[in-house]
Image (cartoon, rainbow, N blue to C red; front, side, top):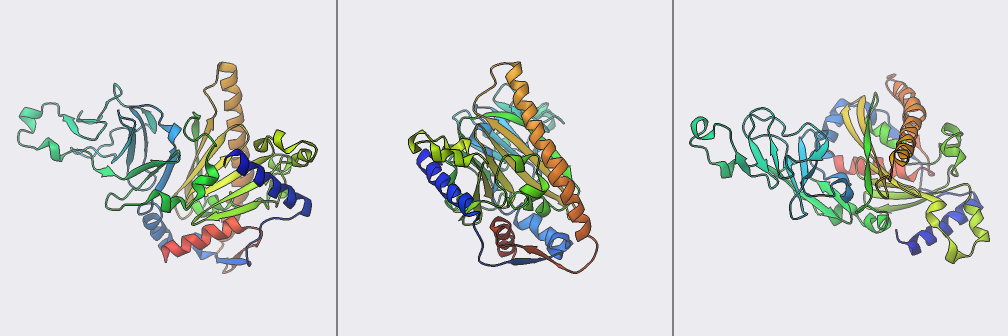
Length: 382
């Protein structure tokens, strides 16, 4: 969001704070407990939401240089994305054409000599365009094969508005503007193209991926679950909610936002008084605060297990070890709060859902983000 849009957002938040109000959905929603626990629905989610639907990979600055790569297999399809020599992106199924081993098991890094991948099993090599360029003992062992037909299987990858998306299913295509639904305008100006990738934390949780995602979509719980952390920094149950197709964005006001009433508008620094939770369907949240942004990507493992990838991006590479440590300590603190407070409580919610008692989960009008996620999931699965 550019400065003019941020100022408008601040004015909306000031009004909500003054009225002690928040954006409301049209009605209360009820969700059957079995939506979290039904194994048949879970299997359908894995296919329709994670194999047959484009996945947000990260901001463009995740792969800043030619030869940089990112690999993951949480959709059920091993995926390898690499920045080519001309600056474009290529995506492949991360499976060697020989015996099927992954070309790299590291989540991110630089291709070999910045220009190729070699299979760790038998050394078959591929360039950044996925072409098979080397077979050890090839003339004798594989005299008749056509190398031109044994390149890596390609996947559609799109990079636009500073965001990278990939389609795990090699038979399907997508339109990135349709996927974003207009939310790209909301997220412009936050540094997706040029920030520094600080790192990622992987957290395994013993509950449904949807319970995991539910925690991100409302500020109703701030004062009760986070009184000494988030609740001490931002207004609870106060959000400006804007929907963009299957996606949505929510802004939050800091407790100091009323200080702006005594400052001329042309001197406002809006990001110091607001933060933004941006949801990319089906499993990603991009959290934007004053001086950095974070991504949270959640993937299903089973009906009662999931994995979270929490990444942090800062405006520029730390100038020294002291600055590096300060950012890393902050990153760890945010992760610890989520694990101790959010995930600790959600683990207890999970136990209640597993009790076998037929009931409804109630989602209030003041939780429009949670409502949108579940409504949209059901629409796609239907």
